[in-house]
Image (cartoon, rainbow, N blue to C red):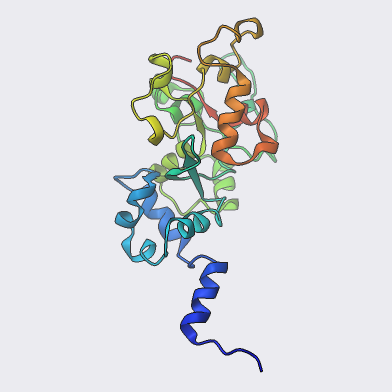
Length: 251
């Protein structure tokens, strides 16, 4: 005769297979609002959203839940593979470098691809230090026809301009300013969500012959760090860095 299970036993078995079905969009919305701005300490999740995360039985289930939504969230681990931080990340939120190669004054067109799937926006503005303001040749907003088309296509048109900026900033690769300025020390330690690598190597301006003497290492080190954070080892390399990297302030 088949073994009978009571309802509570069945629920426990199902929970082992699939994490609790929390509202991913609701968690995403809370995470981009103050005081979090897209990044939350793993230990602080239950304080951020007690109604949702208290439903998860333990840390393992919480991690499994986040990994069900790689198109919305990213987990940051320390050197011992312990999850320290959770963040929002939209993999499709990429900046078009062809667009940034244009020069209106010089008559250079920039991106002319009508099917371009990358956003036309100023990368320095995104990094928070464009000095050109309203006179900048590149968009400081998402309201162009091209950007609006992509926002609608990717389901991002429901967010405000301020929220979009937070989403896009968190979706790019960032090299740690503190680590570079102090030549290898970061005050945030394991809680830092930026890459601890040489900013010259990330920009591609570090000469091959200099990599052996560089205090921070080379592009190979950068690729390992990116791989650890994004878990997309097959796509790591100069092409990914090129289109996802927000420059260091001295760039």
